[in-house]
Image (cartoon, rainbow, N blue to C red; front, side):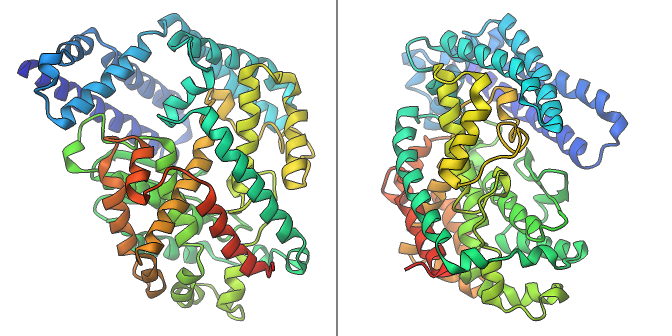
Length: 501
């Protein structure tokens, strides 16, 4: 048994290191690599991914896990080692049910599907993407049935992204969330301030060099350690973990969107803090990760929204921020705060405001669930998409690029992924509400964000995936997931901004 345990730890470490190497190659590709290096980089990444897959599904690992999971051996393991064995056992069981021929077929169609999506979006024609999405969907449903034919396919998908969550639960949660969001949005739309608002920041000059000063200051303020992390630029902001002491984030500077670099940096730095805070005991193990995408998302959303978009934050930060930009000379703090928190229903999910963002997610969840259940045909997706946008947000896409071709998730087979964005938003509101109850958030107006970071480390970060998300949230807040905290937060903040009575 001792021999098998040592080998398991060695394999875990090898997988951890290979994953870090792949992350390093991806980071370089997105930030520094010359364009002509793409084909060689693709070969390197393919080789590493193949090695990781083979190692994670090897007969050697299967034998090791089989030996360690025997009752007499299992009871002698430490709590951490038991969790490592359990996680590997579940992963192996799932992967072993998917024939290699299916994996190969799916990989090939996904490559074609992603390319078709790009072409379809560029030409604004869903018909180009339609036949590929039909094939991807059919293969994903088949895969779900191979893994577990006794449960709903969507719950099989969810298990990859939000373990422990069921689509039946999400329907109830999102139903209440949707009703509350639409009510808040409609109340705001009736106000004089909403009808007369203008995007004044879009016309102001925010030099990129000054934005860079703010970005660096913000990451320092949030607690990102300079000797354990780095920030660069890329087309789309992201976070990558190379190792426990090497986490990298990117931001982006967009013309006409002066706050994009600020909010995207706060968002990605939130992800980075999570990755940097796992208990050292979990290093090199399969447990050095978040238990779900939703919980990881909560750590970025809480910094981006509840902290860095708050009135308390700008009360202390605006004087420093204003000094960096001459265009704000005649703009007072309250006016600026209201400008960066304007509610503007749009077709672009990643640019959605706090109120409409989750409506984007709910629409995608409802549509993909109908697709999986066969209630909606792929050919009818654009029409169904447009109908929901009109019903929920009062806007109608002018073309397929603004509509059903908005995101590339489905082209890559990521069914069950979208709900995690909204679930993460709800988790963040619950955690922030608890911090308010404990008096932690009062430090924001003083410019001291360390207590927030410390609280999140203690209540969320350090656990890695040693527990399910629902258990971490329950332990931190005393409650299971609910949309109530988020809806209350929105009403308090936005009814004040828009003068809703």
